Image: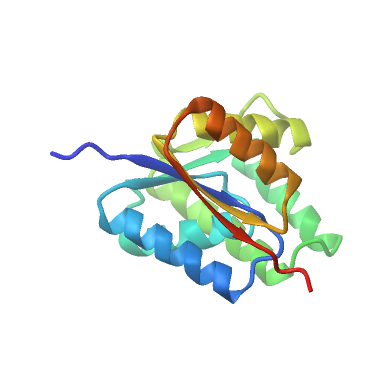
Length: 173
């Protein structure tokens, strides 16, 4: 039996257009069709698109790992707060929450929640990103609009020395 290669897929939660979304779906589809698995931070944008596509090819979520910066209940409240203050579209926010709850129900051992963190903070997200890289065999990054967060993530990937691909986009007009 072929060993599953775990590939992290990450990128911005903002600035995702139809071209980027299609690229994320294509890469995720290739990973899943090759019998590998994805690792995601469960965020909006690139993460959501990748998780949603992966589930189409792995309905039991056996090759989908999610790492959240907090427990799911706290993460859902954080998403609701983003919806309430207008940072995230209501439909998009609710879809993410439902998708993550579905993955957690399908395969709890691969749904990793950080029980130490009480709030979603920059520090908690940075720790989650570092943890994702540490358990990844490879990485794919969708670097949108020169995101400073993605620059830090890419540096961490380079430091680990795993194979990686970077797709760069500029969606600002």
